Length: 149
Ligand SMILES: [Ca+2]
Ligand SMILES: [Ca+2]
Ligand SMILES: [Ca+2]
Image (cartoon, rainbow, N blue to C red; front, top):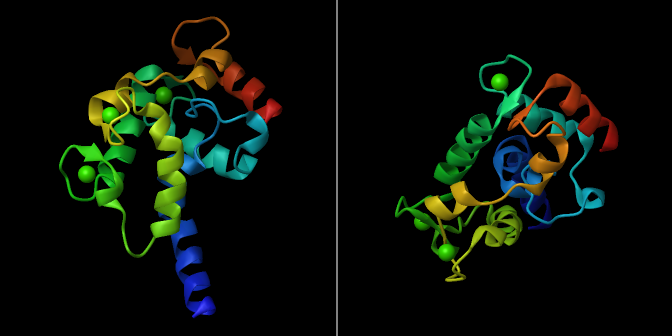
């Protein structure tokens, strides 16, 4: 039984974990301290994924696009909210971990996160990395953030 669980876990690592908020770099975290960030490798993957047009800069709208795609993955029953009813039987523990971070976006604290709550959610990590405050993370700013990971 244990080995079965391990197998599921490694499958999850290749897919779900990369897009789940639990695997996001501090850029997307609301309050997770940098010390708790995933490995720099995961963070790099996420950064690459965030840079949708591949120009080396991450704009705020690219961050929102990534949030949207994360949301649609987590909202498994497509009711417009991410909550416990979206908890999958396969990746339950990954979902729980992701959800733990996700609840930070639950502004009205009804234990479900609407699309709006997610999109309006703050990203202090982004703010911190965006040193010239133009709502774009330039390559230099990204490098500086990477160095601090
Ligand atoms: Ca870009
Ligand atoms: Ca849902
Ligand atoms: Ca809510």
